[in-house]
Length: 195
Image 1 (cartoon, rainbow, N blue to C red):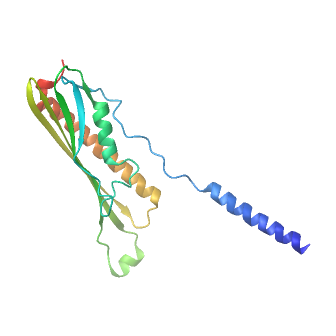
Image 2: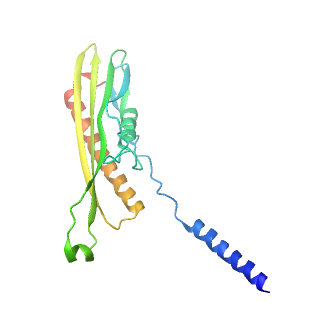
Image 3: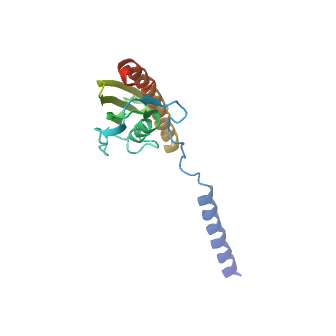
């Protein structure tokens, strides 16, 4: 009888561990941040190239390589989805000069207030900078844009909450960049826009 209870006990414990493993929520699944829903900007050039001047350091304080949608990936996607080459000569270069997210500690309260309150513990600052340069028979031109966003998280935030904050920050910065770059392309590269 003792043996049977022991086996049942182990079976119950094993089942509990298995059920606990099954009930763990999956890591955050995020949609691709893209621009396919926007009309492409038609440029009178033969081809479009993407030049990545920014290289993710991959070490602290940079965390752009850890976010669900790295800015560099989103900016490449912008070039592929927002620009269309519809001409017969020339080239448009999309130059990614910055796609960084940096983690910065936040000064916390000391003493009793610091012990009894939940405070902001980390600030994340995103900076997206990109240019579109055109060289064609009609001449040369350039349009630039920069977008900056930041977010702070509470010291007791879960990893899922932190990743959600990163995702929203990148999404908002990418939308800011899209708006500014389109406006500057229409202003500064007007001779190269296909009619």
